[in-house]
Image 1 (cartoon, rainbow, N blue to C red):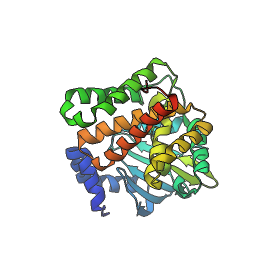
Image 2: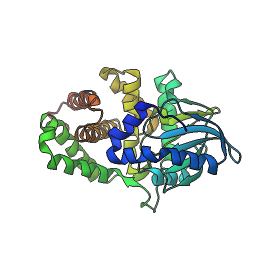
Image 3: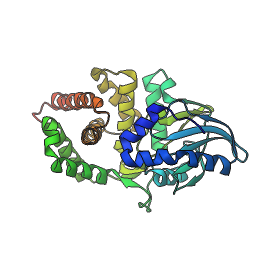
Image 4: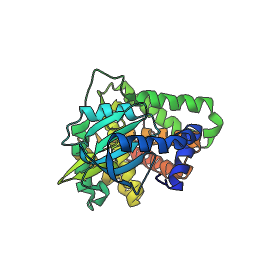
Length: 309
């Protein structure tokens, strides 16, 4: 039996509640089942676990692999996205089981993350190259979730639980209005990675590859927000440096700067609502509010208008 870190188990329960407890109670069976099925040896538990259980191992058939077991609901979209991807830019999925939510994946080596690049411009170039080459259009939308549906659910959540959000209702309403305006532009939508931040971009040989796609249907500009938020969190980036970072992304990702700022604001609003309503890791909310206020006032300053609409 493999002993899981208490912090990981607490995170699963805090996020998934009764379903998380049920998943943890069943996890020993799942681990044994797939170690035996794939004939895995030299099994090691990953040091840093988030909401997925990850093992490194050797497979008789595939060599060095990753066994990933998830309690979430993203497996189908993740596998479907990886199947569309060019393996030059993405990890390979060797096998999966949708009922048990298990995947057997290529182990990337040396596997260091984008955090190991010291230069912001180099990190931005690498991110942009992968992001542009991964996004795709598809007629089969059923395998993927849409950002629009997810955001509309947050609007309904606020409308039904107004008391929870009274202190931040102004910035939330600004986000709602910005998303309404963005939709009116009728920009093309793609299947995006959806969480293309630093820890999901790993070194493979002399190239960078993406892991853990969410498979989200949205306007391409929304791919930039997770990268920006990851930069801010990991490097303690000051708000004053945000403008320069967005300029670099605009240059390499080839997207309008103002549109990037608005997509970032909208994404943050969605996260604030989720964290507040689920009472999950609420300590991140003040930073999110600070970023939104900065984006709002910088737009007023640049446009010399009294509002951001």
